Amino acid sequence: MKKLLVILAIGAFAACNNAAESTEAAAEKATEEVKAAGEAVKEEVKAAGDSLKAAGDSLKAAADSVVNK
Image (cartoon, rainbow, N blue to C red):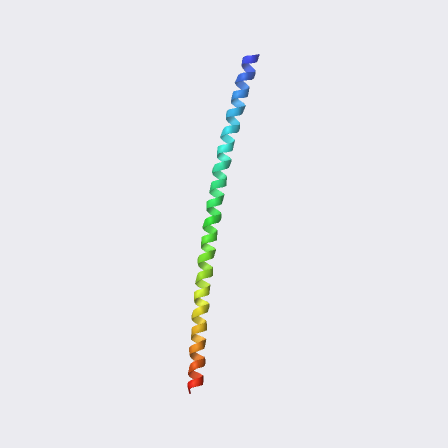
């Protein structure tokens, strides 16, 4: 009976150990996905900022041309 309990305890420990590793891998994967999403948002914001700056420059040039006429 003691041998059976020892075998079951070892099996339970091994099962828990593997579950922890798969949870860790899932957490790493989720972290990488969040980082990738963050980088994508960062690039979109940068592109929007560049577009807004270009629109501002265009508006300034138009205003300058009206003032100079």
